[in-house]
Length: 593
Image 1 (cartoon, rainbow, N blue to C red):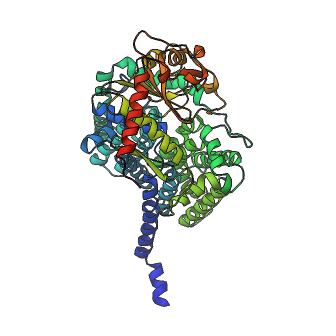
Image 2 (image 1 turned 90 degrees about the vertical axis):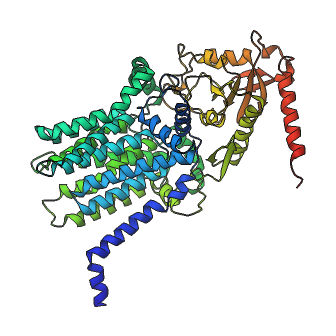
Image 3 (image 1 turned 30 degrees about the vertical axis):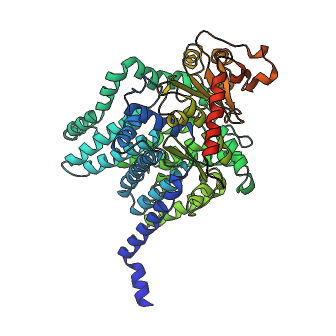
């Protein structure tokens, strides 16, 4: 018994157990995370942007994107070294998360070793249900915090450690390469630490400048006007009104579209009250964490350590990102840092009254997890716990099916959608010729709220006809966006009604230009139509059709309009005949069961 007690008190054994537990928290969910659905607009655009750039396209010149160059360049390099694949893209996303969690651990370690381990665990558990998408925010925030951690470590020494200063400057530059909107999160904490530290400034700025060189190439290839419009003008003045949600969130109604969908998916296993109240209460939990963190540097008993003040500054400067879209996804993205800092912040607030800071950190972390689990059980706790179950089948989170087309594949959670997505993509692949143009968008092109750019990735033999591979309200559906002309350039079109019910309390519900719908009505005919997707072919040059004048049997209803069937038009009837022959040949070649 004495030997067991001595063993339990051994610090090496304790550290080993901590590493073992954190390793399990990190590694066990990974197989599930690689099999999360890959149909989101955000992830589809990442893999398609990287693939297009690999073959010579230029971001912001050839396609719209609001993020920094590294959001595209990093997965492009990964694809060049291996091959275009969603698993490769998600491996890149995993590296982003390792930088993020490692940076948080390194940043907090000087203030509390226990707080560093706990903060890293909270950060990972918060961001893990978001999946492994190589999202620019995770990369940008991760490198910003890693840069801050390296800078504080460099300045701990006298003279400052040159290599760490170089690492810090490079990390900060990389962070801005992902997200230029993090400029204040980068600049102000660095200024706090480097104020009047002239000897440390030179190597820091050299590395920072070198890390910003991708912007030089970016602007040189895309043009300053394209870059400035995509990264500054559109996000600040055109996009926000169509994505903003009410602040604070309502306790009784859900504003964000995908949480509304989740409320149906979780209906049979929701715990902790209505999802609307869970979103609202978690919002206030994060606000309380922000107030507690900021309180550590306010008042007579404030912490005067510049290293901690820099951390608090970074926390406070993320408030605008927290408020810009009040949905649970954004809460996760900011909370992966905010919530990780709270246990150490509370311990610093109570440092005058408590002798054992590690115990306060542990108790605070426990209370934070318990409170968070109680106020947002379904949205915050269950998603991570479900990732810990090997082979789990969490509805909407873990993909049970996949779509394989043209040598590429993605996981998907809905069998019917998988079948119909494959059917639509296969029809285009069978009937099209290499080098033709292709467009994908929602059924009603007046509302460009969301789309499925993964279809572009599934058709590598075709060229996108549009600048707007991902669609956003206030960007693609304006009268001067050129979308109608871009649709008219397409040989083939897939229109989706998967997100037809998209509705949020912002300007996304205001219809945009009807011109693209007019083009669809008069210049295209329907080759194939299912409850999810419709495949259209462009009429021969100079021809048009009036579906309203056609017999009911010769037209189909797509979105908010009729479209003439191709088999009702002499000029395009050969298309449906060819499709029928291909399907008949495939059926006769199939082995008997």
